[in-house]
Each structure stands twice: as structure tokens, then as C-alpha cells.
Image (cartoon, rainbow, N blue to C red):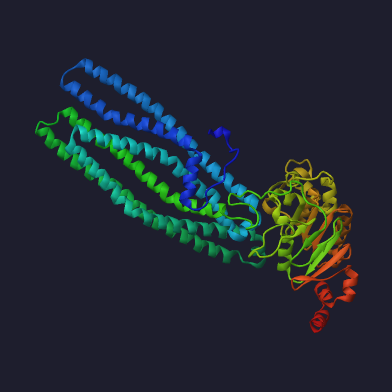
Length: 594
């Protein structure tokens, strides 16, 4: 896999049973890259390990006053240096490629799962947590993938050098092997505590990111009520908690760093002392002593890689667990397998009347049906169920479209058949042209959708704000979530986007709650004409929309209570009149009737 081949054609189906299993799956998916980096790393470190031998040969040549041997040693050093430089370059390329491809794979998996879950994601995981996983955690997972190959190469070469020292000088070789084991065993017990501290720091950081995200999203409201200082104080406290956790974590790693300096230093002192004794006894020559000393000095380099790999593993495990938590989320128990694949179902989108068995709601095909619920939360859940979205807690049957249960058809087919516009739709940043570049049937043009949603004032405002001076509103950039627009303008643009897709069934949840009554009346009339012959469900309590609906269904206490026209329900159903008109006497009459 090369960086130029990104993104991955298929990132695969991850093993989400645990963070460790996810890391193992990630390694298996790019085993070829790991083996390549391991080969180059082994060659690179083997060349570094050859330098002490070359230095010892050079010293022996000088002692023996052999110019020929010294020249041969110089050529050997030159060859080893060239090979070492080339191997180091290829190792870096391979390791960084592994890092980037692994991070890209995880990001693609997260993006795919986010697209599959939609609005369900933020109901199960905080938005700040998702942002942290897709940025910082992805980087830490890639870091461990990158460092593992160099760590494995360091292990192979270290074992080879220790074996050579034991064969060459058993006493010194055993001392070096015991010293390396002591360094590793000294650091190993500290890693669990370091993991806990790193996890605590990550948790505090995620909380601060979530708080900052929420503050930015609600900045306009906070300014309106004068609450900026309150939330700034909250963020300051959260930031100080992150700082404290970071310092607490850094202290542990500073202790590990200190041990990584002290223990190899003690090992070096013991080796030099023992080697000097052997040289004085005549058992080692000067060149051999230099070779052994240089070999032990070389071993300090792999020990630093051991520490880096330990740090990468310590930080990547909690990151992998958090990534698995997001990747392991599912829309519902009924749709899809563990691997996230949809069940087999009809390839063509179903059509016909829509029926909700839980409430008894029947939506005739090709008509504009308004649904009135006294409880806005129940209305939101019912709208989601009509679109085949999962219901928290489960246990409720799926809505049927043309007699076909929406949770029994592939997710893509269900989304093609039914589109649900939430009560608070989101506008992504970009130009108006990009905002309206959505999958559509082609029967409705962008101009028709914008006119139906009464967006003429929005187009005029965007034309005045065009950055290039062209006055083209379609090329004007809209800020993230449409924060530069008013609530009514955002709502109408979202309605235009939904109308442009022209689905078989369009479900709108309070599409005009933020617009004035005159604009709402024009939208109601235009909506009826544009969606003629198509099935449209509008959750609303606005008399202007209800009066233009072909049929009004009143849902009371979780079931359809009455179905008729708006005017007929006003005359015959006090409970309906109490919800729509919000008159105290009507509410009292409804209560007495109940």
C-alpha cells in the first residue's frame, strides 16, 4: 500500500471485540507494510551494530601497524555507512507509510460508521468525544503501528548482538544480557500506572473538547442571555483539570525516562569495569575492548526504541478502546450483522401506503398528511420510526411502506425511499451550490425547491455577501451550521434541500417553526403543489399547514385518536383543539371530557 493509493478502496470490517483485538486486526490488514519496515529496520540496525566491529578492527590495525588492513577497514566502514543511510531512508519511508495508511484506515472506518449512524451517533457518544477519537486517537494508533516495526527490528538485532557477545566473551555477554533484562523489568511495572494516567488525561481532554464544542455551537444564545462568562469559567476549570492530568502523566514518564538513563549508565559502568579487568589480565586486546564497549553503547539505542514502543502502546490501547466504542455502535439490533452489513432485502425501494403498527398511523400514498402530537418528544420518535431510524430502547415494530418493514430492507434502499428532515436540521459549511448538491430524482430543480421554501430573501442576502463580487448566491459560502443565517433562513434552506431530493416519502418534523406566519402560509401552499402525487408527512401543530393538508391524524397518548380534515377535527375533537389552538378553556374542556 502506497500513500498515493489512499483512500483505501475498502477499509474492511474491523474486529471491535476489544481495543487489543482491533490493533491486531489493523496489523493483519497491512502485514506486508510491516514486514517491509521490519526488513529495512533490521538491515539498518545491523549496519549500526557493524560499526563497533569495524572500529575494533581499525584499532587492531593501528596496533599491528598494518596499513592494508586499515585501508580495508576504512572501505568496510564506508560500505556499511552507505548501506546504513539507504536502509534508514527506506525504513523511515516504510514506517511513515504504515503510520499514514493505518490512520487513514481508521479515519475511513470512523467516517463510514458516522455516516451509517447519522443522528443516532451523538445520542450514544458525545460529539466532542467523536472529534477527539477521529483526531488525537487516530494519531496515537498510527504512532504505535509506525513504531512497532522499528521495535521488532531492535529486538532482533539486540538478541543477535547479545548472542554474539556471549559467544565472544561469555562473562561480559551474560552481564550485558542481565543488564538489558534489568532495564526492561524496571520499566515494565510502571507501564500500567502510566496507562491509567494517560487514560485520565485523555478523558479530561475529551471533556474539555466537548465543552468547547458545545459553547461554540451555542455562542449566539449565550450572548443573548449574557452567559459567556459562566461558560468561560466552566471551560477554564476543565482546562485546568486537563493541565493537572497532563502534569501528573508527565511526571510518570519523566520517571521512566530517568530510569532509562540511570539503568543503562550503570550497565555501562559495570561493562567498562569488567572489560578493563579482562584487558589487564591479558584476556582482551585493546581492539576487542573497544569492540565490546562500542557494542554495549550501541545497545543503548535499541533501549530507547523499547521505551518509545512502550509509550506508543500505552497511549494507543485506550485510544483503540475508544475507537472500538464508536466503531462498535449499531443503529439497531434488527438491521445488519456484526460486521455492519445490511440484511438481504429488496433492491428496489418499496412504495405505497405507509403504516406505523405502534400507533396505528396510516399515511395514504401520494397525499399530504399532517400529524399532530401533543408531546414533541413523541413526535420526534415517531418521525424517526417512519424513516426506519432506530428507537432508543427498541421493542417497537418498524414502520411499513407498501407492506414492507423498513428495518428489513438494506439501509441504502430505505434512505432512498424515505427522507426524514429533523426538527433541527444541520447545514454543513460550503457554498449554497455545494449545500444543494445532494442525490436527487431530477424531477425538482434547485430553483423550484428554493422558491417553494420561500428562500428569496436568503438568496438576496447571500448575493450581497458574495466574496468574489459576482452577486451569485450559489457561489456564496455558508459558515459551519449556517451560523451566519437566522434560524428561519437555516430552516428554509434545509427544507429546500429536502425538497430537491424528491424522495418517494418525505417526512418533515416542524419544518416552519422558526418562520413568520405570512411566509409559513406561502410555504404551505407551495409545498402542496410541488409534492402533488408524492407522499408527504408533516409533523406540526400550525393551523396554516394543517388547513392545507389532505388529511390530519391526531396522535394522543401514543395512538391515533382521530383522523379527518383540520376543520372537522377542530369541531369534533376537543383534545385536538386544545393542542392546536392552545386555548386554556379548550384544554380544560378536553380534560373534563377525558
